[in-house]
View (tube, rainbow over the protein chains, first blue to last red):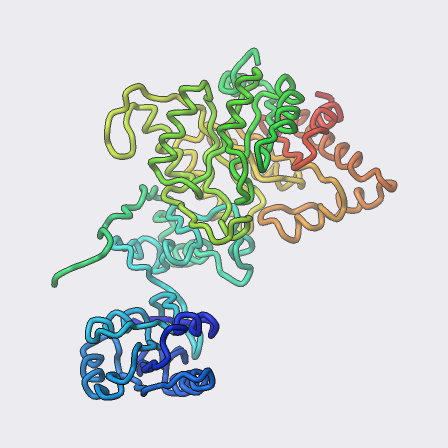
Length: 213
Length: 294
């Protein structure tokens, strides 16, 4: 599982930091390092840019995994610099923002937008394959999730916007149902596509989603 | 209208439907004018539902106007903007106000329209909406409760006979038939040979097929649609014919082409009728009918 993020426009970060002059910057050694949005290089770059705005960056760190208890350890190790800071600028995904906020009383400002949970198809190319809907139909759709891969999340086949195997919202994007059709056909399982799928249960796990294992 | 759309569908009559687009705003003058122009010439008038995801006066509002003026409305209902509660509620309203025809659509994607940041709902899809209509006819709603007074609709759907690839579209078509679609209005068709092949297939199903006729107003528009609109292919000979029209005469040529196609479909009994979409030029629909000899 990889949390895919994108850096917020710098002006937005600047706006969020307008009332904080002493940020402490946190990056993450896992997902945001891989997406080059909050790894060592980007954290140092952010420090330089903030210093250029006359912010007194009290310190920075890249936590190996910001979404687990390593975040707590890192907070303890950096106590002095954190005491000197009046906010944390998190170059982590939203899970890291949440974690950091639960260990320290400073405001935690996200520098990134968390986009989706995805896989890396080839270096630098990330792709959403699951939206965690709580009622998996991959077994009937040849392993391609129409809830995720179809722009409209349709479960009964393609819409009229499908065009030569591409999607009406983006000519570069594959039509999920053309892919599903081809794969089911190759597998000799097209009867699955003919099967009526009833309306989805959008409350399969009511939000906020919590589970005890 | 002397007969309802459903009654017309039950005969062997060549069915004609057309459509009007509600305004962006409260000035209904143009839409009402188009309704008056069409209501006695066609078997049903569709009212588009935020066509191309552009916010407008609602489809049901246009349908009520058609009722008030003595026409036969076909309520276009997309799944883009309403969840299952709102869709069912609107069907209840439509029924109580005498609207008896509903065209169940998935709806265009939000980003193609003019409110690009809106949330696309798609709680149901077109097939599920068709099923919901029939469930409500049986006196139940999607939550499993009984209705105090049920509904009765002539429910239809759309199909794109020129979709590429076609097979996935045909699977969806069959699912819509099984879900209870009684009639289909197709995406625009221009190649009658291709459409004939589709009809050979579609004839196996007990549904009425109305061929989509979109008025070509210029060679440029025809070319644009072929290149940009999914499932629409205007053959080069029609584009050439439009291009060869005298200056200022492209629209007249488009009317002639549409009339010719309708006449051909009717004469050879290729399909059960046509759905004429003039897209902003509703004014000339009577001319198209005249050109078709109707």
